[in-house]
Image 1 (cartoon, rainbow, N blue to C red):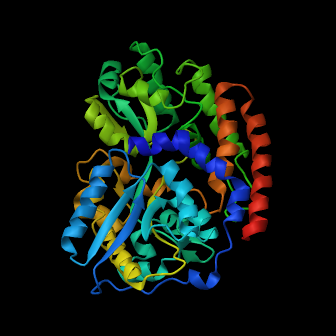
Image 2: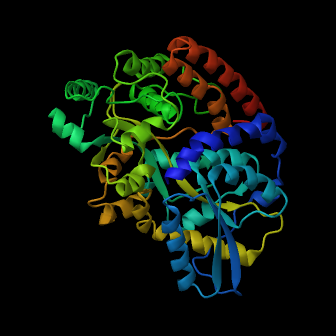
Image 3: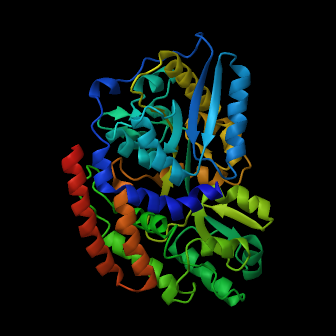
Length: 436
């Protein structure tokens, strides 16, 4: 999974930005009659079929996913799932064009924040009957997850997992500094940084200017009670008082000497992995990489340094690709595959993820795992609103403001005000194109 999101922070951002708002519009406008969801059956007894399954699990999570696919194939004589695994950046570039050309997958996985964009572009089809057929309802998910898969009155994703930012800390550093418990709020976090410095760790918490800085910023704004975007997609709001407070706190980590200046992308994670810093905020997808490193570490929820507990999160979602000429057998087999994967999502926890279904989480599959304390805080996880094109806009505006604020090239309030205005203008263009 390391590859997944560290790639996401590098090439994925560029790739998505390259698609641009105009490209978003150019690929939209599919035949509405072909967007009707297919009926669901939990069994498939038709002729033998091979279905194409696209995903971006190229990191440490890849072998776990392939293991599940192999198990499914072994249990289904008349369905063969053929995996096509490419890095997420390439995945999101190739998918729309492939679907338009009639060469897309039958089924796949994408991040929840990509669902609305691809639904608006007619790349994926609604999955409401599939959700109903599996028996998945709002009762099995947090409201944030359930709301995030809906676009324009229909649902487009079958949630597999959730993955959030987490706080990782070096347990040997903590022991040397006399810190006995993971910090949970602003006071205990500041106290921990002071104790770590007193113990000889000059820069105990490196503050990045790029990935995953914007995820830290969003978490801070949500902790303060703010919302970065209007849920109807009409405006950016990350220049609110809560947003300014979040970015000022991030800059203060540098000004107060807890972090070196100008920390390059991913450098804070590499420093933590090498024992050069004591605490870092990064995704739970790093768990298996840290396990392999041999570093003495533990994980805990990101402290509520700016108010109430809240943290950025995303989710892997199964989708059904739009078919210009649907093959009913493949559609039925694809739905059986997604239903089976949802039922086996507890096994996916071995990849360091948190199953999205409450019924799976409560089955004991997370007992004793590194991510268990993170999963216990799932109700505090927040997702971006399902607004088409928002990812592209965010990479071109919010992420720029956060980088400038952390680096000190623009005052936090100035950077956020200017970039929020640009974001609102772009969102208004998308809203006019796709409607509310």
